[in-house]
Length: 343
Image (cartoon, rainbow, N blue to C red; front, side, top):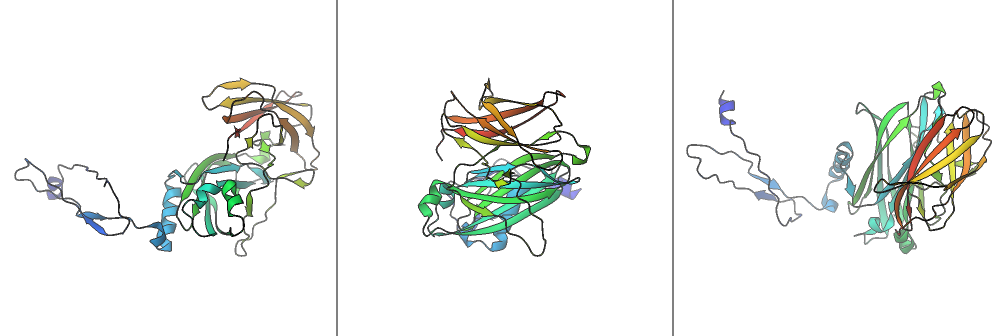
């Protein structure tokens, strides 16, 4: 009863200082109430100012990363673009490549040293909020001779997750370990029930024509060995897909479409372009070139071209529809892209 009486009237007050000194010192707070005779006021005595990122203990830095991922806190200090897709590894498991492109200019902002440490965190949560797989890695780059080139392009990272069928939210955090500048992004991905042999079309993969990325692949762990298979190949030749394709006007882009269980029969490929305002532009922009022989039952890899003719510079989404003319079944998927946009 005494507790209820003493807390019977509660006000939530917020305070935001005009200028913050990052010194970690304690700041006093005083609260005055006028016209409340006979009342007693209780409040917090003050707060600790934040400290500079570089002055934090390594454990504090890890906790900041955990908080950003667990709380799905969006951070855009760094521009990051993410590409992922579920490739069949077995009847009950998918191999999920994670390709992350990080803007080089953003990574180097405030970075005086040519030694650049970059942290990658990736976590996959199912629909119940359970973490089903993850990876973390620190990448140390020496930019003594390539700083200007790195600033124009950036870092492209390749990792992977192993997931059973289900719906997932994959959260990615990339952080400059020196400055603390971070980028956080989330992508939704569905892993199909491969043992049911239902048709599946993965997102269209743009064959990367930018060879200036600083490429880094995941490191293998001797403690937890994983069989890593590079899935981006056509006729045995590897290629690098773009997380966010940046096309030029009148450029003919090469696409690879990966599908499962399409069945026999001729395939028809249709595409449409969606602008940022939701406007759908139906156009003859896709041309199917070849249905390759993979040698794996149920797996199809198709080559196509994409011509974004008549578009103004900007950000768009390419929607792809693949129809089996014999069965009438249609599988769809999409990927964002930019046209005529500088980094």
